[in-house]
Image (cartoon, rainbow, N blue to C red; front, side):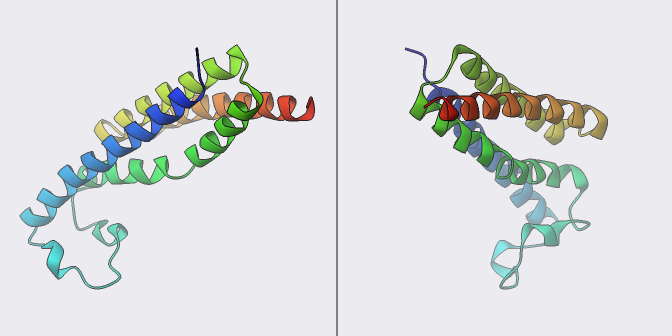
Length: 142
């Protein structure tokens, strides 16, 4: 049985991998730059490290933040598709979306040239649009 919940959980797992990546990158860089975590002022945020740590160190954190933004729409859409029974097209679009978001993460965390990153983001967004169309079509047909 093919389920739309599999790509949902794959993207959740990938988001947790990016969370670990940002911690494994940022915490040693903070120590190297004499910024002990215990001495970060109350209310301090990751954004406070912009311009303090090298840009490359912050890239995984930027991507993690991106994974907490648009994918929220993916999760909601996938749950609607799960409830109504996803089409084969919706399932393909979901897996393609996840693959493109992983590619986007890797590109942003390792290379981070914006034109390529934007192209990957745009392709993922097109997949999400297709999923949303499938979900809307399915809900209206009920």
